[in-house]
Amino acid sequence: MRIDIERLSAEIDELSAISEWPAPAVTRVLFSPEDMRARAWFVEKCQAAGLSVRTDAVGNIFARREGTEPGLRALATGSHTDAIPNAGKFDGVVGVLGGLEAIRALDEAGHQLRHPIELIFFTAEEPTRFGIGCLGSRLLAGTLAPDQADSLVDRNGRTLAELREAANFQGALGDVRLEPGHYAAFLELHIEQGPTLERESLDIGVVEKIAAPAAWRVTFSGEGGHAGAVLMPERHDAGLGAAEAALALERFVLASESPDTVGTTGVVRLHPGAINSIPCEAVLEMDIRDTQLPSRDLVLENLDRALHEIAARRGLKVAKETISEDPPATCDPRLLEAIERAAAGLKSRRMISRAYHDSLFMARIAPTAMIFIPCRNGWSHRPDEFSSPTQIQRGVEVLARTLVEADAGF
Ligand code: HGY
Ligand code: MN
Ligand code: MN
Image 1 (cartoon, rainbow, N blue to C red):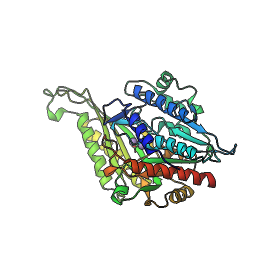
Image 2 (cartoon, protein in one colour):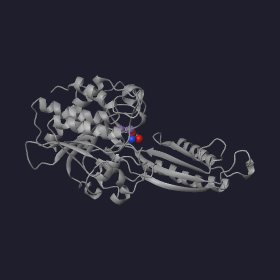
Image 3 (spheres, helix red, strand yellow):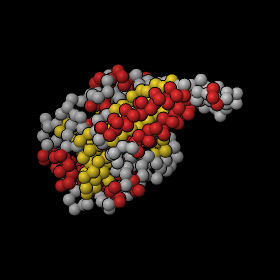
Image 4 (cartoon, helix red, strand yellow):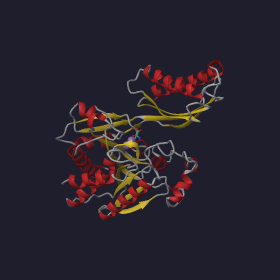
């Protein structure tokens, strides 16, 4: 079997050019013109490979090839191509286009799988549009109520329902859900988005556990006022409440016993956002994770208390909205062994994923595992994110071989 890395590298570059931001940055947000162009481009590629394609009501795309034994449940692989602002060109894309290349390589080698194979392009793994990550895979796994999803609102006040209708994603969100057992197994190839594999000069990461993200939206409200006229003792500055909250999050995370506890205040919006106006409102979006739930939830408990203490002391109102609080996912032991067999001859190790992925939700409905490849300095979510053609080729080869292993064993 031969992985055509020249073809795959050219496709990764072609897709990266469909971006709202100029190269080397990639930005491709759900429902943007770039997202829609990328979807059309991807469907054409799948059809050219002889796959039948369907799109569900939230825009998940399924490209399918039948197997030699009708009636067997499909094997599935896939990832996402949406990209946060100022991102790189490999996050998610390696799993989508690498999955396509694995299917083509098996086909070109004349290897017909017993099971049908489905390549999944998940809608909105990134939280950029609505603040919640893994929108497509949450709905597939049935962990997000369809009407709650349809009423998600973006910063321009447009709902998912409106935007998906405008994008011509047909059908009711309630029809997106797949029953547990729908797939025989799910595999996702992804860049590590961390430094471990490169630091230890390894080729393949066999992911056993996927960290659980919690995402909060916190709004402080104060009186605002003239930056010159209101003396300091009379102020109720929402911006400073927000600043204290972000530092409190850092304090609680650093105090955690678990080295895997991380916390980020990635969004801060001040209103009205004028240099000479005391912020009357500050909206924070806070991301807190760990693979150990108790460590993560202790941070959440402390943070919740601190938010109310800061607000009381500063004469502010505070409102906290839980965007998501998910449990970590454990990958299927049989698939982990299959990946290790497929990676024979390469240097691999078992590891956890600190980033979340669509596999976090696919693990709710199918035996699931992830294959990591190294990325330079562990960098991701930045334009200089990079994995070499050789690293990508090895990852795709291991994915293809693992599909063959799963085809025999599941
Ligand atoms: O944030 C994450 O972990 C993923 O890259 N969306
Ligand atoms: Mn990402
Ligand atoms: Mn990703």
